[in-house]
Amino acid sequence: VFCLTNRDMTLPAMDSKEIMEHFNRLDNEEKVMVLGAVVCATVLVVYIARSLGSICGGLPSEQEALKQAMPVLNVHLSRFGNEKLGLCLRSEGSYATITGIGDGDLVDNWNQIQTYPEQQLRNGDRIIAVTSGGKTCRDG
Figure 1 (cartoon, helix red, strand yellow):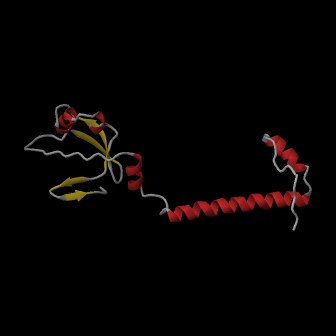
Figure 2 (tube, helix red, strand yellow):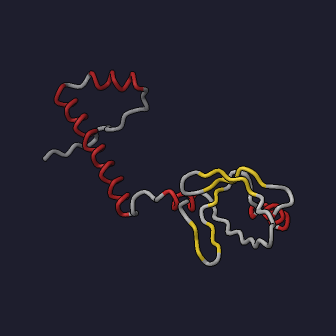
């Protein structure tokens, strides 16, 4: 067992050219040791990342990621008679994106009575579920 003392093990900040020049000055045994250390560090980082992923439950589903990235707004609308909802929608797999809101229709009226702009429906908002008569429609 060797114990090295009084040896400066730090390297000054270098660009890639200087690093390569320094590496080329090493003998073969030192180069193998450096490459081995880099491989070990890479394997360790990959192992830690995979372990954290399995501990944390891995990557979230698309639905969970949407909930985390964007707030979910619950909109309660009641339609009577022939009243128009007033939404133009584009289907995008498991959700629909609002592409237009009709003036004077149900959703436009909802938007007008909201105190905070964040509570209004806007173009680009995604509808992820619709409940009608106590039943929820998801995924299409």
